[in-house]
Image (cartoon, rainbow over all chains, first blue to last red; front, side):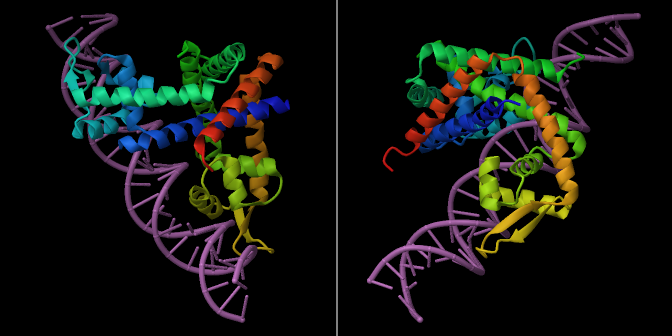
Length: 148
Length: 148
DNA sequence: GACATATAATTAGTGAGCTAATCAAATTCA
DNA sequence: TGAATTTGATTAGCTCACTAATTATATGTC
């Protein structure tokens, strides 16, 4: 077992954690918690109402986990749920007017941090890194359901 | 803002999550939860009793978060706490005999998965990826305390 | 030696994720 | 059409992380 494998494993544990913590720290002044700003960011990036399903996937959590976050955001007037016209089971999540504005600011902070963390990197090396990570993700998908 | 930045950000979110979930799935038959096998793995890898402090750092959680995990593991007879001789505030965490054995098995499963996920990668590309991630981690450390 | 500060472990309380189970609506199919 | 299956959102209950505050011991300073 190559030393490099262990190194990569540790970095994969540490880097996203540090990044998240940093962004959380910078967004805290806006009054959102670790989880809720993710929702506003993704909705802001999407630029259109999303099904809860879809939103959960983009945030990277289970639809069930999203429900409470939306309850909180809705109670504070940041989002509304609108029943989908085609599918009456489904609901679309919309940013309210005030949320659209704040969401833009959150995006700026997030992008600024992203630039700060990734700005100094060599583009070719970054591409290689992306390729490697994509391969790992693919391997993980394969590993998950060998007999699907 | 380069597209590559966004891609990397998403991969950094998704890959460790998938990896963790996969390992958790494979270790579940042993009866340990997502958090507790991490502790046994790190203790097993260390090969010697660790201070709680030190163990928490290796697992990547706060010392306070470790306390309950150790309580559970201790109640089930997997670890013991031993007061440190030099420092009477500190405690060293030891694997019990049965835990040492199981810990070896957990390590095997973890290493097998690691090989499965990383085995097919080009070593040079992997090194580049490690380098890039290390740079990001460094940038994150710099960003955290600009005026320290 | 006494006092202030720092450090190791702990406890309490909160936030946020998960899975399993439920309900309603949509889809599939005999 | 009617019955079985699937799917979107929800609820309930569990796990595990965090921060802040507490207790006991160490260390550093006057």
